Image (cartoon, rainbow, N blue to C red; front, side, top):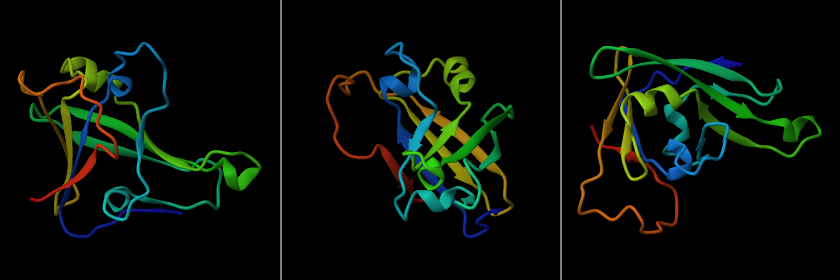
Length: 143
């Protein structure tokens, strides 16, 4: 079952890694979404009754361009597999269009009217990109 959390407006952000931006040359199936109770509720609920359920999410950027991403629950653990993770996929074109690099930040917002917005912030030159940061790079943003 797929349903939207139509609660209060909410914003989350993620500092992009070199993996997220494609700078490592590797391939990954989208950005990993933590299962934390402060980040996961931003996204629609995806249950484990069907294999790999997904929801198409439409975001609007600051230029009013629309972007469609997929929120996927890779849940084959419940179907004789090993994966049990949430991912946001289909973001490569957005990342390339805005030439985002590791250390830059994306901000995803859900408005009270249900619209979803996406913004980005560039890392400041004096902030070191080469510093290893442990822990989740997803954060809740106060709006």
